[in-house]
Length: 115
Figure (cartoon, helix red, strand yellow):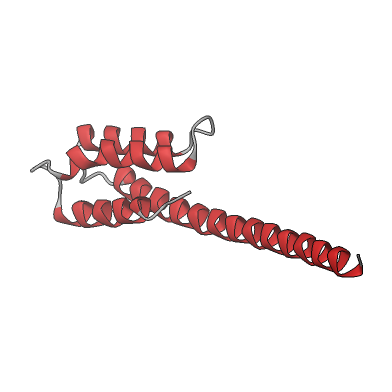
């Protein structure tokens, strides 16, 4: 009977350790994702604030920044929606090369966001 109780206690402790480790991993991943989102948003804001960037591109970039800040949608969905908006803009021949490089960098950061 003693062996059974010891095994049950060990299983319970192991389960609690796994749950706390999983929670810590989730919090770490959330922190990393928040950093990537902030970096991508700052890059996109740089494009949106540039007077060299054509107006139609600035509007789409600003719309993607707003989409990234929508709290009603999960972080991964917000990133995917922004990538979708920015993908068509990246092909625009009117975009300057510096803005295109910054845009690709922001899209790369958004693509690395996972939940």
